Length: 211
Image 1 (cartoon, one colour):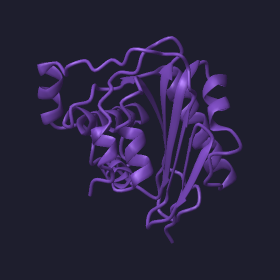
Image 2 (cartoon, helix red, strand yellow):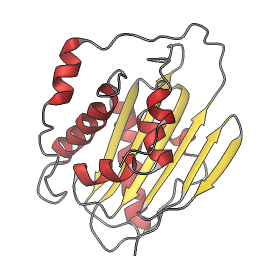
Image 3 (cartoon, one colour):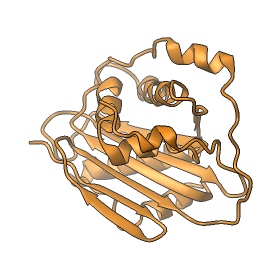
Image 4 (cartoon, helix red, strand yellow):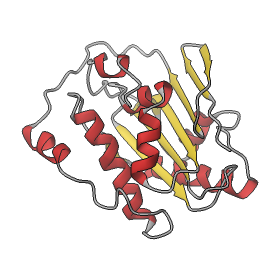
């Protein structure tokens, strides 16, 4: 059985969607008085890394360490960003903590949900944000498969390619939240309070999804 439920929340607006995979995305934006947009050029070295391979991208979730799989997911989403002219996201330990805790919570309670307030979880983990988002997925056995699933779903893809975010955290478990197949994943995105968005290039996100 596979299901999908996408919710986005930006300035109080909500939008439901349906499709065929076990995913959920939430994006939450706070309107702060952050004026000038930052549209930094992508360094050549970043573009070169984007063209390379991501280690452990096709490694089964039961066959590699959490740290290696976490790094593979971040590498893969950064390839999607850099290849479309967006800055890479930085792996953030507070967001990793938030995402990992929530993944284990879903598996422990056999629930597939963002809970009542995902943004408060991110704050409780120590990340103080002006904009935050979250993708979750269940039933995907490898980093490559979960990122491919997220990119093929508009709401999840928009989180990955959101030009505002600077940081990302990833959580994973070989356990099952609701799907019979192994692999439960959470990815939390954020823009720290007081920092400008990493880019003003909204074009890639506007083109979502990418199959």
